[in-house]
Image (tube, rainbow over all chains, first blue to last red; front, side):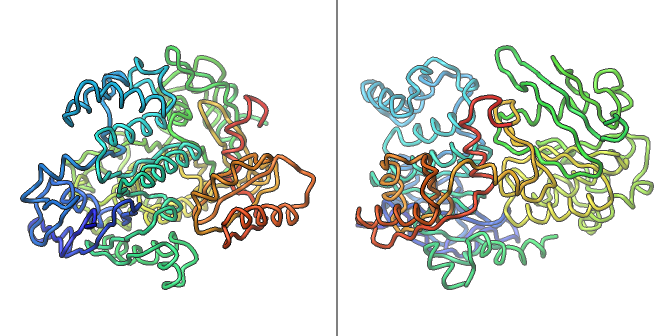
Length: 246
Length: 316
């Protein structure tokens, strides 16, 4: 079976600034991969290239077996995406959001109905189907957004800081949803500023100044670096870069 | 205590927006020169409270005084004396670093020169970039500029609404180092954060959830409020072990905690060490051969999650 994500020397420059500097890595199907880095390290630029929104300056990437440049439409059909900033339409109801996203991904009306019912039942949100998303607590919004991102059964789901500002119990419930999706074969590519959450990933990479400064399982990274926690390793790697920036 | 002695008194403050209860009878008093944290998730009421304390909203019930001044009656006197850094990026992106700072100084009828000694520890770090547009700054530098702008009129109390949200772990630490520097000057500071690990850097914290204060205490004392013995479980298959532990008849709570699982038991009778041995044997018997279990000290996040489930009023 081929890798879910394969990046080879992936590079993006903006003028003279190299935001992503020849990064190479693979993510295996069903893996939970934590994509870490300080603000400005190049994470968002890398994700935009992987989901086909931004062309690389050089290098290649294949997602779900398709080239992100020449087969971007095939890639988009096979991925889900959610972020803290943009996930659902606040003025639409829960059910309307499900229907809208199902339609965008080309599901049949029957599929939208059955999968939507299963989604709401799984979240125990059936009672809130006609509630405007704006009226839901943040934790519910984020859990709903994650479920909606999985509605078309993508091979890979990209989660950009999915748990920011969420209470500690909901944060953990969210991660159990991630585990469940991964156990079902979905590949999960996730960014977070909570380093305790990085410990929940199968493997993590830490980006510093456009490059991947560390990559491996949390256990191996700690063992090889002698750091007690990923938080300690992260600060050790990222602090010199932050200091140089001012 | 007299109003003059406490820089901030919040007494039974409540606020509704339609059906939504944003603040439900919140009370606390700041001690002089204290660094006080409002810790909790979004929707806890932190921003509403800041808006009331900075006289931008009027409370429905209760009262509050800032520097001995009433937030409803004395709003104009309060506004010149508080520094406020709102949660959203509050600078003018098309103005330079230096222009933003001059603008905020002029709004308060002062100048950057007059306020320079106050802001020097922070502004000094971004002054080399004084001609850069604020919109082109990195996240950590924007934060430092926003803090400089909130301080340039030399306020007598500082309110910071989630200054570190969305900021990486390195910049967050640097920001808290700056707050230590400010606290040392005697400036009372109230800072809101959703990050439980930052609570440990405050003198005292109020844990907030859905408009209520769950607990107010020194960070170490909050952890001690955890009501049961707590065990740390180390095991390779965390997700499998999590589900196995939840099936235990006496399980009170089972949560992932970084590289560990935290388990608490409804029984208080077994000594923690005996409980740890029992849980370890159970896991090993269920096929988790590498399971290690040991008693551990509850932290703020453990306490917060235990308090979240408690009925109103039972926790305080």
